[in-house]
Length: 193
Image (cartoon, rainbow, N blue to C red; front, side, top):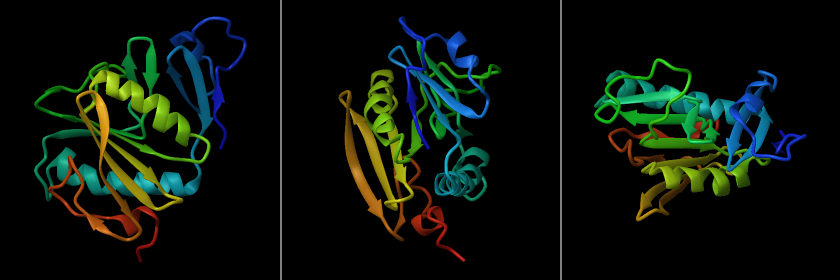
């Protein structure tokens, strides 16, 4: 997988019109004026994302076996001014967003984002995107690395990210803001039978 920063020919900040001209098989984002495009993720990334959604959506989005009270959305398109980001997962507490938007994107920052790291996107996710999420006041971020088999839980405190926990391997964890359930990390890595 390869990330393509500032897809040419740009001698100006990228616009949403530039983004929509890219092929549909790319995940396209605009961060601080630069257009970033990457192909669909490799299987370990996709599997971790699928399993994560399967664990979080029933108890938090639907309220089955958990407290409910969230919108949990796969690859939401987020518009923060000129920035357009697409995290792997985003979640909004329904108390902050009582009705989901009818548009293809959200302008209200999520309460939680999850980025599933790939070798080619890790630095973009960790540096550029986390900085924008912090500026927008997103309270929690998860960074999942399926190759390193880790889950980092970050919380925004005084405008800076604090690492609350780094979980690895086959731990069974309770991770903010979804500590109401146990999450088996082995399932994210495809290690369950």
